[in-house]
Image (tube, rainbow, N blue to C red):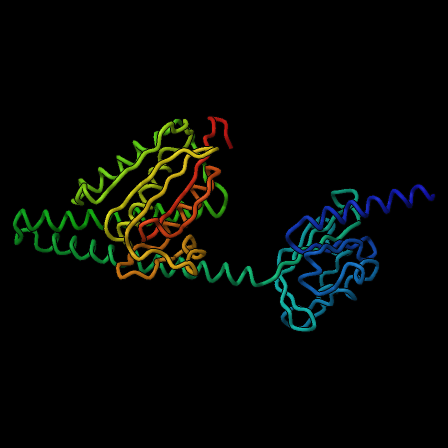
Length: 360
């Protein structure tokens, strides 16, 4: 008997350690409704310590109420109801002090199908994270609506005009209108691509297809594109260090990283834009520098957030570019920072590990 109690205490300790590793609050009640598990996250959310909770009846520990003031544990009827019930979806509940929590339930049965409830596992989450997520989504919807309105209005206006008055315009006038429509369609396509990238980054579904990538060659390609678009070649400088290691990266995403950083330097900076590619102990470092006003130290932590547009006169864009850059760099196992460039202006510096085809 003594050995059985020891085993039980050991199992309870192991269970406590496991649920303490979870980021959400977890409360476990046994078949009688007594709390047998109460992790540290639950303690932080509720102000109740594990010592105060374990061994007591669940509603005495957490007297949760719904929006109508009803006793949640009572109407949950954890040990009754349909025997096929396995969970209770997340809902918003309140403690007596008015603190709001998001609460979900899983019923553990024995036997698994149709048996009696042997444990009730309750997860708790604070509402601050949900509020931040809702604000972020509202900002995203607002930004997308604003960014789509201008090009779509232009496309609609020019196509309606051409369809109604085709014969009245010269070929040159028609070409200008169609070129504008084409450019605005490209803006819409780019916005949709950025939104898809944000979705993949936030959900962890971003895939990296590795191959040997010549970073200086990719930088030259990006610079050549700007020159072809009318920028002076003298505005760009590429510095390449000796003995660069072989890097296995996703070439399209490297182009996207370099393209976004170069565009950011052109949009917000001034003077010469310098790209420096140099070897480091475990890979390659790439710095993109401009000669503008730079980024104030107090703003540096915000630069890679969604919708950050800086404080320059020429803002533009969706404010998603640097957020996407950070996600792409980190998906490769690299890091990115922003600091003051040696000659003034901003310097965005990212590092990439050497890697292999199987590197993850």
